[in-house]
Length: 163
Image (cartoon, rainbow, N blue to C red; front, side):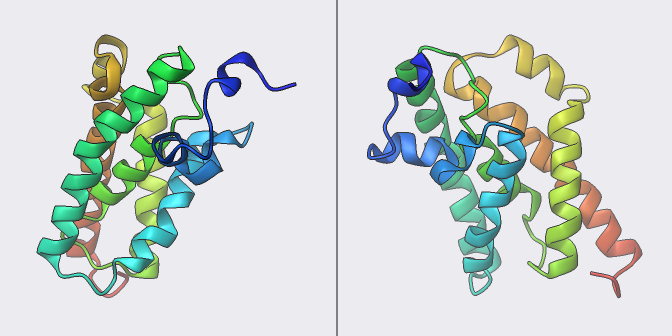
């Protein structure tokens, strides 16, 4: 028998399907990590995009994510349930703004994003605790992505031959 919250969502509903990271958020352990991993194939599909097309996609994923995550949380009747991982997908996309999607960047960016998403340094932790709804679900991960992005830019600048 499925848990009660799981009975309230359907993988056939496109909003739920996206919010649950195409099913990756349903993995019972480390759903945020698996949601972040689910972003990598999508990121690889973005390699041919120019900087502005990729930036527009990041913006679209972020704005749509507010609705997707908020609607799924309401349907589940649980605020920011761990299986809602679209915020991780969008946060991963933010991590790679204005950076080449190379293998070293993808690996280091993934590690940095997960670090900031798990540790939740200021102001991420405050936002995570105080904001609710789709905006609250999304914003802490978008900030984690911005922090990871900043670190990755510095690393690319300091060690350009590695990235």
